[in-house]
Image (cartoon, rainbow, N blue to C red; front, top):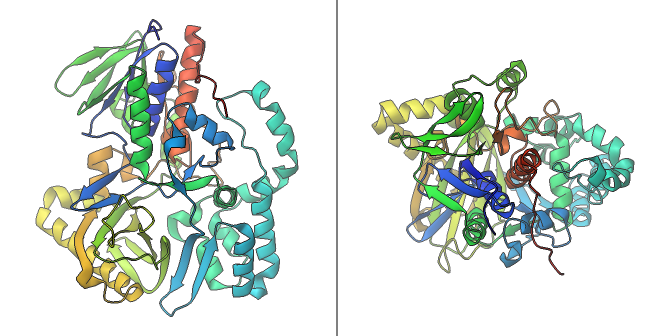
Length: 501
């Protein structure tokens, strides 16, 4: 394609930045993605330690069903059909220290039978829950990148589901869980920060799983990222690694390029920030282009917490374990001075043969915390104590794992611990957040503004303009940003060549 529509600089080589670049190239722009790290992906990443790969992002990907709307959107930015998806029967297994367990199955009929068997006293609420999942499995998600004209048939189809959506959107997952008498069922709906999640988000997740539209791609998040990079390369776009943007260049209230750390300036017709929202507004633009509405968002909205991740390379076949298990603890795990966890989740990646040699298993444990400052200051001011704290956390996690998998300790070959300081160093995400804004009843599903007041030729994309985060938000906000640019420039928006099925 002849590139004559102008140049777009995109800050951040995560999912949103890469998708924006693909769309830009399709529309005739020359796109250059600037990523500060030495590899692309941002939070959608994994890393190697010896023979093991440790994933930190992807549990499942919306769009694995070839007949689903999201599948078509992914085809616009990479060949999703080249991925191999698996759909484990269990989404998660909850276990107590006393041998009780509850399996949350992806198939709604099996889930209903499991819950009724576990808690017949909750039969009425169980049937209400599974009925809601079945209903939402038929719901068609309106495309946020399209207007009323394109979505009106979808809106018409969805009218019968609006009362259910209003009900589930008005309560948090934890509040919804209080309807159940059985303690294990109540535990499934979360505690702490994750319990604040809007109940409708959890129900949609279960509905997508029931519809085989939320499978896990072999290779994890990097399988998706690398597919998009290949598509960008084939279209002539550029991804530049190790390029950290210091500020966005503005002339007459118009974004005209960026300046990198080290002094290099790069001119552009448009600038898109797919980087951290807070850093973009308050650092790269010195807070000059914000109003009360933006200030209110960053003052009042709650980002998702940060996290530690303990990753273990285990020289054993752990395929008898569930892929995802949540352990309910009798004695809380002390993560840091402000954080105690009564639930600890493990992922056993025995289903992904790319993550460990045959007969071995990559295992990760995810520990959310809001005390990101403790870890950052410790890493900067007392490296020796920082390492000691990482070792303490690893030992505590291994002790919990040993109660689940007997005599596992001698088989552990690799121990790796990342902290909020690691997240901030590699991604720059505000407060070390694991994604962006927490999707709560207060925030809702609505997309936030992707422009800044008074600043022309500038757009934002990614998790900071769509509460709930996740890889689909990167794709959809990128699509929306390029559509808006094309509209202003009077350039046709090109999705992709038509695909014959």
